[in-house]
Image 1 (cartoon, helix red, strand yellow):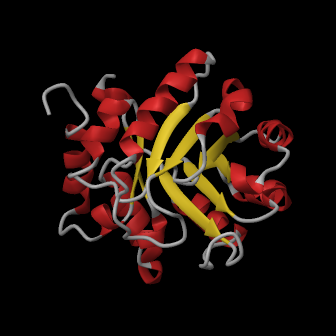
Image 2 (cartoon, helix red, strand yellow; image 1 turned 30 degrees about the vertical axis):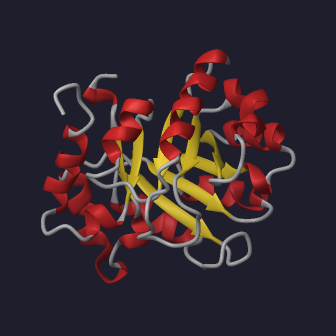
Length: 224
């Protein structure tokens, strides 16, 4: 996979919301491809984060695609308002989506990219029947709910299996990984077939976030 197709998506979970405009401008100037927005409801995961208003604010402050990850129960309740607020992609958890095909198609009807995501303990077989309809498949490499967690090593095998599933089903979906992505973990995921990487703590804790984005991207190349 050529490095040009690699996407680095810094997670706003690690941003300083007291200086959001500055952080977004820094990420855009620093070469970020997408902005990852983690929406948590305090029910599906033990944390509470952003709503549509934050997405609307981000949309006004940046031209970058907003990659919105819904870690919520009954995600369909949020589709209309979040797309209206400016979400480019809505990704929902299969664990919270018993009518996954219907929900994926509704997101697409609204004009956004539709994604499905799997917790570490959830089988890839749960998305096989909808894989061809997905625009994005997200593999969680930590248990969702909090930033700064340690990468689960077996996630690399799951990424490789996900790439095989997408190929077998003729899916053109983006293959994204979220959780513990840093210099020590990104290359293995890229070699396993991922093309899009959510990096929160690694980018925002760096002395030079732009240089960190570049370093992460450089590790996704044949020369790395």
